[in-house]
Length: 425
Ligand SMILES: *Cc1c(COP(=O)(O)O)cnc(C)c1O
Image (cartoon, protein in one colour):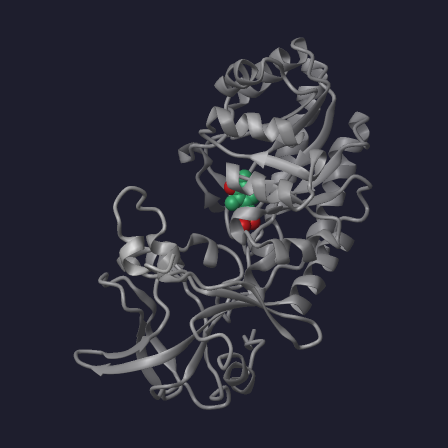
């Protein structure tokens, strides 16, 4: 599928008068269209709810858009819980799916009334000790081990993943929790990431639904919800076929009616915790070409670097690049597109065929709406960029300002750096 940017050269030239590159920009129209499609795809399930994985794009302006579609949040840490709480989410609006969890984070989640999703059998005792009680609603994360495959293709290797209860621990855990007074149970699993196939959710659903039927039968626990978690991917590459969320919802419904309904479990709510699917395609990292270097290869040096988007450096991930204003020109030049970190993996693209590039060109790096800004860091003393939102009516709003050196130097309590640099305070 052809990948087009949602900004044009003309728009960017206007935006940079106020907000210099690099910046992440998000497309409200795309976010809304997609969130509506997801909601409709699971409308057959009366209790259905999406809990947006905050870690993907922790920005309240964006999360607010999703709330229009009934979404809650899925948090992995204290600050994500704090953000959710401050946005007015509470109780069952918040899912807390963390692992290796510190006690104070469990306590904070419980204070908000969040639904706690336990990652490990030993956390039953840890949680009870931490809170002095167990919440009436609790969820457990399941890891069936082995390999997770779809149509004979191995998708991932849960047996090598740190997450979740084993099958035996799950049954034992449900028995213990029930004996200790837990009344509503949830079941959760995340077995493969960034799946670009319509089969992932239906296959996962069958695994979870079958174990849920056995759990309810054998432990008497009342299973109120089943959380399919994240993992629905996006087509980062132009040759990938996007997932069809309507079909995915329909296929999950079939498995639900085949497995849960006959077992008398037709009241189970389906939850999802999607991050990438909700936001990924609706973000671009916009950056300007600063230099061109001609050595053993042709290098295009831009004003963004891996601190703004870590995926290519970390996973060798492909992110499509549009040279703005040159959309119709042939891709007949081969470049490495680099940032300025003292790290040779700081490359947004390697041997990428692109139109002929000139210094001053603007590049839109695609699919940075999830796990983009949020994976940012400060290596080489680089500062985090701004985040902008392209509203449906075409206005551009600053939804997070860029970091400044003041932010960077603000934490050396007791060593007078800040005062020297900023005597005015
Ligand atoms: C990261 C994560 C998600 C979201 O994953 P995506 O791949 O962005 O959909 C959901 N749930 C949990 C527990 C996660 O760790």
